[in-house]
Amino acid sequence: MIDPFDIYARFYDPDLGDWDVDIRMYEQFAARCGSPILELGCGTGRVLLPLARQGYRITGIDASAEMLEQARAKIAANELTGRVTLVRQEMGELELKERFNMAFLALNSFAHLHTTDEQLAALAQIRLHLKPGGLLIVDMFNPDMGRLLDAHGQVALAKILSKPGTGQRTMRFHSEEVDLEQQLIHTTYIIDELDAEGHVQRTLFPFSLRYVFRYELELLLRHAGFEVEAVYGSYDLDPFSADSEKLIAIARQPL
View (tube, rainbow, N blue to C red):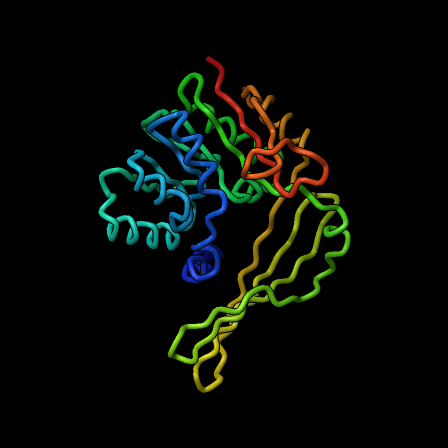
């Protein structure tokens, strides 16, 4: 079976590669914790590379071989191979030879764990790989029930990307359906690549995300043995509220 993220890998950087509003937050926590750092679900290295450029030693894991290949190429191009280690692993089967001062799951990576058992298995393995006092950052979206209740498979245009001077365009549409019982958002990206003559190549990228609520996330972390230090509602570390766009939990491996 083909990993859907292998299919999406070549579109990730044009789509999200320049999205950097969260980088400053990770830099602040990295300055507090120091190396080594672990990123879970590192993808093509969107967050990992800026931290490595600042001198941090970082390990990135991902389940997608194609995502890791793209990350590996960028690491080599930036001459950062001495600071970065990439490993293909599932979060719940994490098995590394090192323990870390900080670990993080950026941009809803935790939502790719679809059951409570998967969530707790991943958190247990992460905890085993943190040093005493080590920090875990989990970045999730704060569920908007109005939006979730309105998601019935409608197809909407999300983004248009153009290649200057070529006449080529890429259009990304998305469709969402929500399973309220399982807390799953079933999403399909429909990616149309148009050449200068108007020919279209279509790629479908289906994936699902499990949303969590604030106290559910805190309970998962505590059940896994973490101490919850804070919950924030933005990358500027504003206090969390019902209207917050983000749900960012900061937890510690007990001393």
